[in-house]
Image 1 (spheres, rainbow, N blue to C red):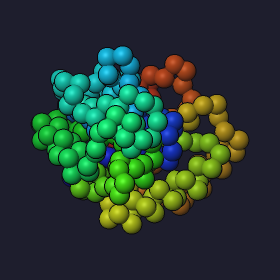
Image 2: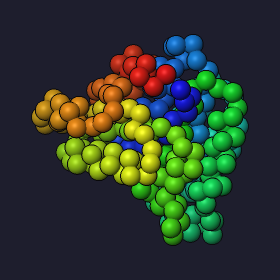
Image 3: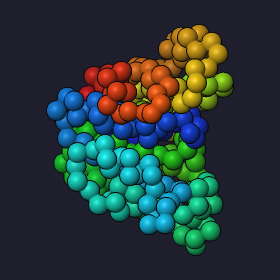
Length: 223
């Protein structure tokens, strides 16, 4: 069984990083060594570091340098291909996949590759982050932001993942803000229509705690 998965979301700001950290904590609780990589991040501090990548570093057990976890750190918090163009940088799926392989081959038992935004986020004129997942041939974990429109977004993302020849290994229902109207009905619909196991339902937590959220996850279907 695979030891590495690609984490994507139904949209931006649905809690991919929070859920990734919770998944890492759940794996650690099973005695697994963990690592994560966010190959592309847009929006960095004055030191050129992205908060999502720093959160992943704090949650994983394998000691990696920042540049290994986030090899492409773009300054502006805009779409990655736009941020890269502003800096005169060019991203290629093959290069990003190679950087990810370096971490995947590093020996950790449980590894996550976190995307940026949703499944079809461009990294250049003709490539998207989905091409990185495709070159790595990883199973995909989908973070569904439980808010209005989530059913359509989740089903379209699942279709796109399958169309790209990859497996939707599991999904997490995450409540990134206050509980949505008809939450249970939306969740039941997603349970019935998404062709993958539900790994957990995470309520709105303020402040968010990866350890607390990990206790609501089951990674058994993917481990």
